[in-house]
Image (cartoon, rainbow, N blue to C red; front, side, top):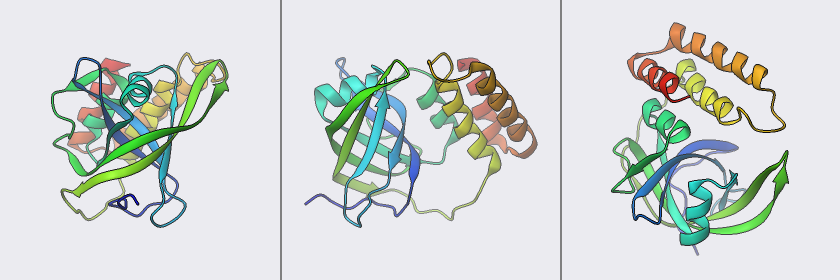
Length: 190
């Protein structure tokens, strides 16, 4: 029996995952995690393409899923190649070490995908916080998703660029210091 997830959620939550690469460094990437359908069930995730996360999941079979509200860490995870010497980011409010198992694979729009079952091995809640709803934070996350689809067959690049421009305007209007720093970083990476 696996340990339970440290949070209750539904739908898909954008997380940061670290996976150990062949150089023994921890690759930092964004990963949408689908909530378990049963209370102590397994979450799932899908990787798209032959990414470092896909490779490391395939070769090592594990990683660390991290729940963080830091928009700069999220932008760097989603839009750059970032490697660390330790698996847990300083900004993680909670983390889960997971063992992964491939459950399905296929191709969509010319891009390979793999579905993974995530089994909790260990977990820690580092900090509980009072949730706030920030339009700017959500805009940063949505912009990284749109940017990750640029140049991918099956997506309209012009429509994606329009979405990114809209999200930039939201950050400009509603963003705090950290969201604006994240947007500046996003602009340099995309």
